[in-house]
Image 1 (tube, rainbow, N blue to C red):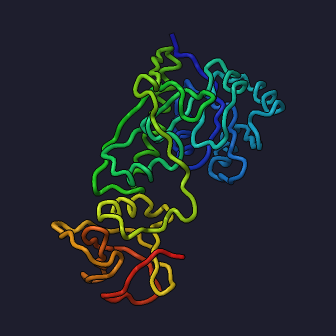
Image 2: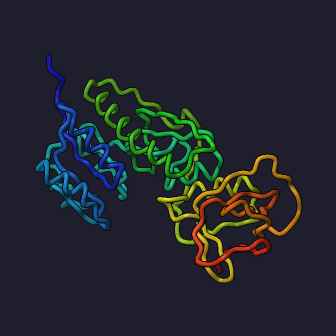
Image 3: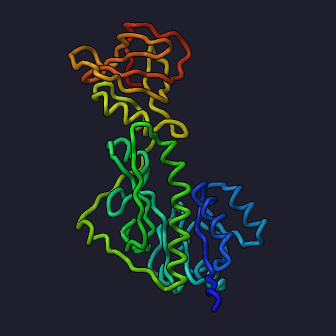
Length: 302
């Protein structure tokens, strides 16, 4: 007996969504009936894929509006999928398709709910991060877990490397969850069974990239790698001019001592040795229009 085919309403945006779209499209048992894009952003790649595969492409300011609900009913989808979508699904739209709504989240739920998770796991010096596919409920990242996979984090990792892993893993775990749905083999885990509280992370915004040199070297190392390119990069200043810092290295056996945090205390080729709250750290990749000398004091931008 051939495997049944499911129809999918795809609420999506960005590289996460592109990777998953390609995997879903390659599955004979899965058909995307429509794509709903983020309202306030342009995803020309996803809209181009919609045109290529002759899939209706929608964009609305409120997916919970009654007119939109009537529109998507006509597609008669079995399940809705959210991948990097930015609107909250309320009860009526959640219950519209028989299979409800599932979402892929780059966090180890019930921990790291919320926003900018790959930045926060590095800032918090985590040794692993998770990818979770879960049902959407009326909370934020609180629905029952379908699948979860954990990946190690080492000191060579950065925001860029975690993104590369997460793009691929999110797409693969999402498709595997849809296969379970097709086979009627989903066994959920309630988040409260893992931890009764969990926690949320807030969205990072302008100003959150400013570097505090009074932190210890390990915290500064984590902060810089957490927001490196393609993030905004850590920021400091010298003589009123901004410095963008993209990469640093911990100094083995660096001595703890009291001095002036942020002061350049040495050089190693083009790299800067900078005093931190406890020891020193090597700044190996930075952008600054001007010269930096030993004795200069890097500071927070006002």
